[in-house]
Image (cartoon, helix red, strand yellow):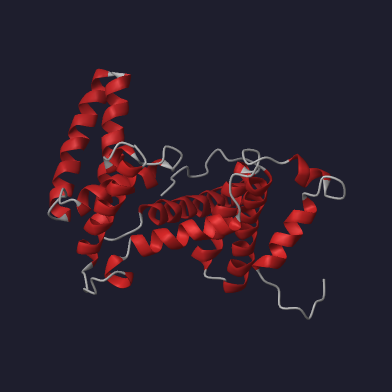
Length: 257
């Protein structure tokens, strides 16, 4: 391919078609199915999240390209199976964005608050589910493959957009303290099922607290993981140094604070 040519989505689609050519294509690419590619989609998504968190624009561009490649791969498989192609994928995305933004693309040119827009989205999505013969409840449509933190946030945000929410952080804190007491009782009783339920409720409340405070709980736990990792590294480095100087760790402080 000419290096002076400004590459486009069409070029990537052509490359994937050649890679999947039954006679002259790549054996590995030909062996892949829509399901076998799932781990790669997840991996590329997390790698993109990592560089976005770092703020490295060059790496972000690379990872966006890797994720786009996975979409193109799925589009090619869909095309071969005569179920869909990239044109249909883009068409559905365009239709959805127009349908869900009637205040921008429709006849009603009315400025809405974020809260009003979220409520409108829920109503539009409810109509979409009904038209597909699905359960109209937004709480039944949460993706079961989402990580648990994301599931909780989606449930909480949906409830909030429909008017069901805590008034403030203080109310959630009070509920959390109450739940801690209930968890303590479950631990004392050594009832495994009750402990699991109470700890789950605690997690849910902490995530809700983060949401109310407009703090990403995923970033919170990621930062906590990083701090713990650094503290562990420092601890064991100090212990190894102490052992090398004293030939023993007998009197090494085990205080890990």
